[in-house]
Amino acid sequence: MILVTGATGLNGKELVRQLSAKGVAVRALVRDAAKAADLAALPHVEIAVGDMMSPETLALALSGVDRAMLNSSAVPNMLEVQSSFIAAAVKAGVRHVVKLSGIMPERDSAFRFARMHGEVEKRLEESGMAFTHLRAGEFMPSYFRQVPSILAKGAIFLPMENAKIASIDIADIAAVAAIVLTSPGHEGKIYPLTGSEALTMAEIAEKLSAATGKSIRYINVPPEEAKQAQLANGAPPYFADAITELYAERRNGGEATVYPDTAFILGRRPISFDEFARRHVAIFRGEQPAPKI
Ligand SMILES: NC(=O)c1ccc[n+]([C@@H]2O[C@H](COP(=O)([O-])OP(=O)(O)OC[C@H]3O[C@@H](n4cnc5c(N)ncnc54)[C@H](OP(=O)(O)O)[C@@H]3O)[C@@H](O)[C@H]2O)c1
Image (cartoon, rainbow, N blue to C red; front, side, top):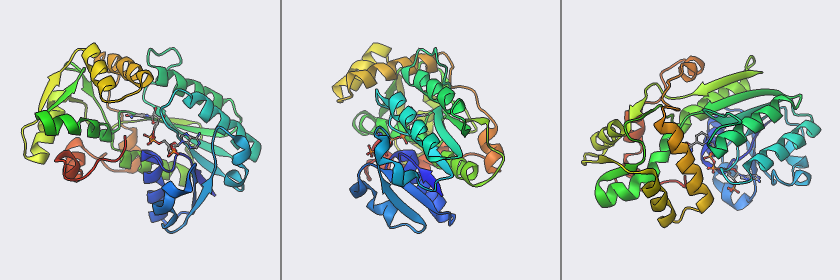
């Protein structure tokens, strides 16, 4: 049995959908069954309720599980949540854990979530279970956060200067994860996952303009101004600080490298930003609500 954690989230839900569509039996770990009614209706999907922070709630969810996908929210206790799951998985006899990590998970990174991902990777490697690290670059749906300013001001405001970034669609991350979870040979592997192009924010704005048929500009903003805007939009201070650290890394070109792994594993070109923008044009035009990101 394959267990997908974080199954009510952006990546977990997409992975459960793709495994179901492939006819693969999958168990979805959720904290609140009411949030998983759409998943429960899919073929080959069973729902298990549990909290990764409370190992005693995971016994049924982990029973008979051979491989698991590990992912959870970017919150202050992410390291504890994922470490707690790893310990429970070892105890339950899980053979292989696939971890959704960040593109630059250095344990001494200036970006707090990169440090946590680095530490989780290390703990997983030392757990005795087989591991695969999927080190994903920026999720393309992150640009859904720009929809309010696109609609109000015809612009995206980001502290990126002229730096490039090689973002990836979550549909491709899920497609890679589905292959890694259902085929041999990925144990002990580390895959950096990006799309096939690195783009400046001016290029992203051009592509959003082309998809929506509206003029959308890129306005570079100083990091402190971007942080204040996040706080004004209701972001918790911890998260606003984390994003400020992240953009400093990105301005330094930390996420500008395009890696071949996504295309190699999928056997096709990754989804381009043009295609992503076209697929989600209703969201970028404000005609359809964006999923929570
Ligand atoms: N944003 C990016 O560009 C980017 C790039 C690379 C990597 N990442 C990493 O990707 C991860 C976030 O992925 P995502 O956006 O798919 O996540 P998400 O949409 O925030 O979903 C997180 C999921 O984890 C579940 N969860 C959280 N704590 C849990 C617990 N204690 N027990 C059981 N389930 C728990 C949540 O359940 P509930 O629904 O109950 O809350 C939800 O299903 C983070 O590790 C982040 O650092 C992000």
